[in-house]
Every structure is written in structure tokens, then in C-alpha cells.
Amino acid sequence: MLTLFLISLFINEVIYKNYIDEKKSSLLLQGNIIADRVIAYHIDINRSRNGIDHIIKKYSKEIKSRVMIINKKGIVVHDAYEALKDRKLGHWEIKEALKGKSIANEYNLKEYGRTMYVTVPIVLNDQVHGVVFISSSLEDIYRKIQNIMKSYMILSVLCVGITGFISFVFAHVIANPIEKLTDSIKKMYNGNLEQKVEIIGNDELTNLAGAFNMMSTKLSQVDKQRKEFVANVSHELRTPLSAMKLLSESLLHQEKVDPKTYREFFSDIASEVDRLDRIIESLLALVDIDKGKLELDYQVTYVNYLLEKLIRPLKPLADKKQIDIDFVNLEKVQIQLDRIKIQQALTNIINNAIKYTPEGGKIKISLYTEHDEVIIKIQDNGIGIPEESLPYIFERFYRVDKARARKTGGTGLGLAITKQIIELHQGKIEVISQLNKGTTFYIYLPQNIGLNG
Ligand SMILES: Nc1ncnc2c1ncn2[C@@H]1O[C@H](COP(=O)(O)OP(=O)(O)OP(=O)(O)O)[C@@H](O)[C@H]1O
Ligand SMILES: [Mg+2]
Image (cartoon, rainbow, N blue to C red):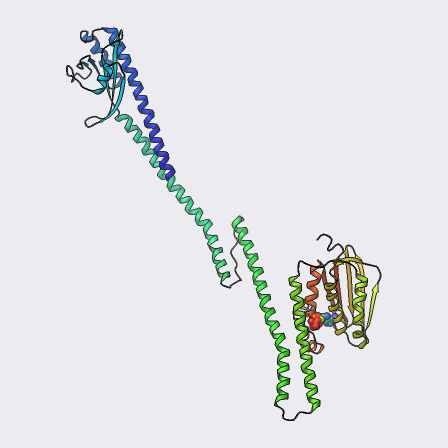
């Protein structure tokens, strides 16, 4: 609107100047022509009345203005409209013209409205003999300018209306999804993470909505996992604590307890403490891995030696159950890895194999390469994992048979830790198992890890 207003001022000024200037120069030109004609007719303007009268009436009609001839004394000697004949006029323009100047001036007269006065000296031999006085109405011109401005105003109002309407519609179209998005963000801020915004169309806002939905999905997943984890941790920590409380209370409440019972109960309490210790150690390991995500300590390592080294201390455990560990070591494999972390991961799996394989069982560990991958295969002929449990064994705190796992002292964190370590090395872990037949874990590590950062 402001722009249109400024333009209107400008147009008004230009049109006005244009028309008025044109009128001014045209009248001055006509005045000069009339002056020349008057001189050509007769030098003495007072005497040749009829001839000059004829000329000014003709011009007056032609230029639609009043034409007068005024003598040196300021008296009207010819008036196209006759009315002012023989009257003395004291206009400033006439005085100036008598001095030899051509003047054009604009007035707003009460009776006639906007009028232009033009005076041109009648000069012969460097002497002023009289003045041509033209008085012309400017009302026509002003009316024209007004009409133009009126059309412009109507056009402006239309423009403002149409632009306003379009802006309103567009603002609504854009603001609506943004409002919805803001709403969802506020709800998320207030803790309701499961937010979805509608996706229609294919513009930037839709992309934003898509990205927002992805973010909210991820956030609610993470939040769910966190809650589950905290619930699991507290449950797992509380179980041995309540067992200890129960054991110690029952000792307290008995009057006479024989040393054998004391011994038995305290050994139970000690094993619960061990269990707590193991859980906390595993949890700390998990936190450690989470923290050190970006800082693996890569070292060029012979995987053969690493496996031999970590199997050795596990042998006595296996021997106790008369389990035979066979390491098939066909090729020398050298890759970059974080020795301590990989050792931890592999130990977890071999420990499981020993733990979940009955006496006299067999464990076979093989190391080989295929394509660009190093594969470590750990196979046992133990109790196996039921098919429905397979998708969950890598989850934190998941144990197939809680009662049995308790007896074997598991926390359910071992495989979660292992998986995380393998994935940190950009590898993957897979499992195949048959109930009562045995389980095989496959660990794939890319051969060029650690080399490209
Ligand atoms: N080789 C295997 N044979 C049979 N079951 C297995 C084997 N490895 C793992 N499982 C099952 O998967 C579950 C999860 O294993 P994970 O190592 O995470 O926990 P855990 O051994 O119970 O406890 P932790 O290793 O933390 O002491 C185990 O409880 C067990 O039921
Ligand atoms: Mg385990």
C-alpha cells in the first residue's frame, strides 16, 4: 500500500508537470504568433481595429482561450470577448511584458477555477508597443489528471485486495503445518515423545515433517530402551540384595544357630555379593563401551595368537566339565583391532559355550577369511537356544531361562556387550542354534578396519 501511495504521488507530479508545461509552452508560442501577426498587420495597434479584432477572435476560438491586446498604458484595446475593452488592467504579468519579458503564470480563481495567464510583448525595432494577453482555463487538464488518478486509485485498491487475499491464503497454507509442527514439538518438550505430524505433498515443509517424524520415532525408541534398561538394572540389583537380606534376617531371628548353618548362609551371602559385583562390572563395561564409541585403540594383531591367548585361561573351566576345546587354526590372520575389547567379546561367547554345554561336551573354534572378512566361528554341542528366544539374546539382561541362568550365575549382559564391541569394529555377529543340539556363533570382522580411520 505504501509503495502504491508513493507511486501515486510520483505519477500525479509527472502528469501534472507534463500537461501544464506543455500548455505553458503552447500558449507562449501562440502569444508570439499573435504578436507577430499583429505587427504584420499594422504597427499602430490602436488604429487598425477591425483587422486585429478579426485575428484575435480567430485565434481565441482556435486555442479556446481569451485573447486580448493591451497597449503601452495597460489599456485593453482588443478583447476577443469584448467585455474588457477600454479597461485598464494592472496585472503584474502585463507590467513585466511591457518591460519586454514573456510570462506564464497559473492562478486558482474563484470565478473561473484554475487559469493560466500568458503575456507576450509586441516588439518592433526593439520597442515594446503593447502586450498580447492570453487567459486560458486549466480546468480541462485538471479534470483529466483527476480521471487518471481515479483510475489509478481503483487499480491500486484492486491490487491491494488481490495481493492481500493471496497473501492471506498462502500464509494460511504455510502457517498451518508450521503450527502443527510447533504443537508437536511443545508436546515432546512436555515429555510426550511419540509425536507424528501428517505428511502431505512433496515440498520443503513435508521434508521437515518427515525428518521430525524420524527424530520423534528415534527419540521414543531411545527413551523406551532407557526406561527398560533402568527398570532391568534396578530389578537385577535388587534380586541379590533381597536374597542377602532374607539370609541375614533368618540368621538374626534364630536363637541358636549351629556353625554349619552359619557357614552355609554366609557362603550364600558371599555368592550373592559376587553376583552383584559381576552385574556392576558388566554395567560399567557397557557404559565404558558407550563412552568410548569413537576411541577404539586399534592395534595390528594376529587374531590366531589372540584367540590362543584367551582360550588358555578358559581351559581349566572347560576341563572341570570335561569339555574339549578345539581350536582350528588354518591360516594366519592379521588385522587391526582393539585387543582388549575384542578379547572381552570373544571370552563372553566362549564362556557361554562352556556354561551352556553339559559335561563331556565339545567346543570348536575356527578362524578363517572369506572375501574381505575375518570369520571367527564358535560352535558347541550344548543345550541350544529355543527359536523364539534367538531374536532377544543380544538384548541387555535377556536370559533364556531365568531360573537356570541364576544357577549358572548369568547376568544377561554378556552378549549385549559382545555385540556392541563387534559393531564398534564395523563387524557383525550371527547365531544359529538348535535346542539340545548346540549353538554356533559367527563373528565377522572387516579386514580393513581401522585403516581408514
Ligand atoms: N552357547 C549357548 N548355548 C545356549 N544358550 C546360550 C548360549 N549363549 C548364550 N545363551 C543364552 O543366551 C542368554 C544370554 O547370554 P548372555 O551371555 O548375554 O548372558 P548370560 O550368559 O546369562 O550372563 P553373563 O554372560 O552376563 O554372565 C543366556 O542366558 C543363555 O540363555
Ligand atoms: Mg554369558
